Structure formats: C-alpha cells, structure tokens
Picture (cartoon, rainbow, N blue to C red):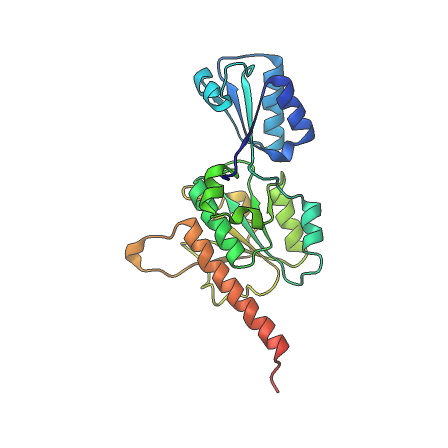
Length: 257
C-alpha cells in the first residue's frame, strides 16, 4: 500500500493540530478570500513556528480537502511521523561518529526521495529537513525513496541554525556541498562526527546555513555536465563518507604490526 498524507480541515481542528501535533504538519493552505481573526492567528502561528503555508483560491482548497466545508483552512500532514531531537539523541548515544545529512531548499519530492534512499544505503543516522522551502514527506517523496522512507530517522526541527551550532560545538564537522568551491571529497576527513549540508535545485545552501559550514566539498565533474542534481551529489558524498568509515573501522580491527 502506498503511504498517504493525512488531511485535516476546519479552524478548530487545525488549531488543535497546531497545539498537539505541530511536528506532523507539512503544509497549511488558507483560502485567500477569507478574512477572520481566527485565520489571522493561525497564519501568525505558522510564521512563528516556521511552517510552510500558502494562500490559495477556494477551488484549490476544495480539491485538497476533498470537500467545500473546510472553513478556509486545510493542513496536510506527513506520510510518517518526524523524529524529535530527544529521540535522535537516544538513537546515537552509543555511536562514536554519527553521520547526519541536512537537506535545505530541496523542492522536488523526487530528489528528496532519491536522497532518502541514498541515506539509507550509506548508513546515515539522521536526515534533517527545513520546515520551509523543502519538499515535505509526501506520497511522491515516499514513492521515489523506493520504500526506504520508513528506514530512516527524519527530523524537521524549528531552530536548525541553533541545532547545527550546538553539534559543531560538540565536535561535528559541518560540510557544505558546493559546486563552486571547496576541497575534493576524498581529501576531507568524513570519518568523524559529520553533518553534510546539501542545497536545493534553485537556492543552493541558504546563507544562514552556509555560514555555519566549517568546510566545503566540491565534486569534480566534466565541464559539459554543468552540475549534479542534489540527490546525485548527495550519493557521491555519502559513498565517500561510508568508504572512509569502513577503512577507519578496518584499521581499528587490524592495526599495523
């Protein structure tokens, strides 16, 4: 069975969703023709929590909700729950060198799904997503992941900038994938605690995250190719990280005589 989104509509239902299960919300749509203090307060909460939202025509809202009795607001929830920071901390508590990926501004669900598949293939411990400007965990992303979406710890926290700063303080390398600058991936040390930041198709790595990178990685490709899409670039960097980690583990098990 294909994963499906959960649709919640109606002012009071969405208010309750924001109070009790905010982390499950991927996107909220508002009827651009409706004006009320309740709808204004819901949009205010979206801005405060950095949730993606749009104002759309009534007909579009009817299509999303599947009916017209939605009171001007429809919330779309992810196909699976997001992990919390507390849950992640427990999962990696015994790991010496966790490997995280941060996907920023990846708007194409196909690219996000392919990246999820690569994350699982190369042993990534967690994938972080922006709350805005990044494709949600939609059925299209789930399908593109070839069923791997359920095998990866995925988070979408509010304060990504602060979280990355905290991890850097703990000794994580913050590696930004950048086509125009940086070191070759096999020259970088990706064997320790690492966060790889991947930018999207149009915006790249946003400035607020780029300034947190401690080093940049640039993948050498033929000039006529132009550039790699984000899922392909992610796969290359994750393969190299996995190769280095396997080599480090092998050297620990078989130290030189």
